[in-house]
Image 1 (spheres, rainbow, N blue to C red):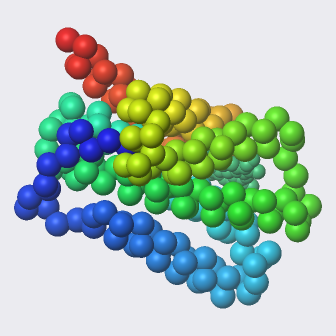
Image 2: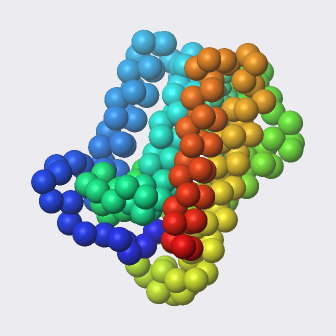
Length: 203
Ligand code: HEM
């Protein structure tokens, strides 16, 4: 996640840098500890925490996924903040989504829940990309890989993760409608923003 368009976000006080990850981690711990206490145990809390962790991960993913497009299309304070902090937003996404993985894996291991092999493979591949993207989200990795390879990995990885978010939510729309439409709607809006930004840069 390069800081190409980064400039100080003057006059806009928001959480920035590593403090963003600390804030997300703190909220997550409070949410999980609260659920544990309210549901009286780990297994009992699982059905109540898997979906919210996926939703929080999605919100962070979309913030990182649209950062440059929003700054290209509607240059301003929000876009500057998102661009400057894209690396930390992405790392927060990785943190929350790996917690989602831990929760769903323990749900599979300790309850009757099951998933087909293709679903596990498709979801697992998203975590391979996510791990690679998180591990290379530092200046040293960008230097070692070269900007071109780094960009290629993060572009392919983020589109694959986008695809899995859509594949997880779109088929269930008839059952989850209307709230279930939020992730697909926001996901496609984000994709249109990226296409519009790409077209603007090509002009
Ligand atoms: C193989 C790994 C995975 C398994 C077994 C799995 C399993 C689950 C389970 C059990 C839920 C809760 C469903 C419910 O409460 O009804 C869930 C929710 C969700 N997961 Fe995962 N997940 C995996 C990986 C992923 C990945 C890689 C993504 C996205 C990149 C993702 C995105 C979501 C989303 C968006 C939801 C919320 C769906 C909704 O609100 O309708 N999951 N997942």
